[in-house]
Amino acid sequence: CDRIRAAGIRTIIKLNGWQHTVRYNRRPVWRKGACGLPELVVSLPFSKTRGGHRVTIYHIARRDLRPQRRRVVRYMERQIGLLFKELTKLKPSDLPLLMHCSVGRDRTGIVLAMLQQLAGANRRAVEADYLASKDTVGHTSVVSLRRVLKRMKPLKRYLRKQLGLSYWDLHLLKRLMRGKKPRRTVLRRAPLR
Image (cartoon, rainbow, N blue to C red; front, top):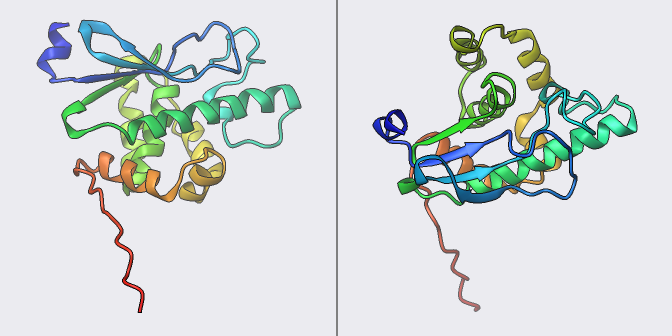
């Protein structure tokens, strides 16, 4: 807890909740997490998850899979979409946040790469950030990251069509990633003449 408090962390996002068995009706859940901080628990399976058919985060955005594996991919995409919708609800007072999975390179790395690209980071910066985890978690491959991000091109369309995000969700996520306070604009109806 000392390191978390020293870093000023106010919210935790856990991407490996309920990772041992795939249950397709799970939704991200807020609960009291480590150090008494609010924690959003998201279920993203990994290759050894029972019922996961050896699908990993690197399979997302693939459509050339057998039906069983495609179902797991759709489940992961739905979970990521719900995670992003929850992120749009965060206030500046809820930041900074800590996002993690078991190791910190696969699920966390891909989700953060998607958010960084949405915020406007260039490909090299995203790849460098992804490879930085090599120092702490071991082997990482930028080739896998490139394949996943290539399948998501254009990213905004993928986020809207496959993950179910609205244009407003994308706007709020972009502002969150850029560290800007979201502006809640009120649309006024023009007077009838």
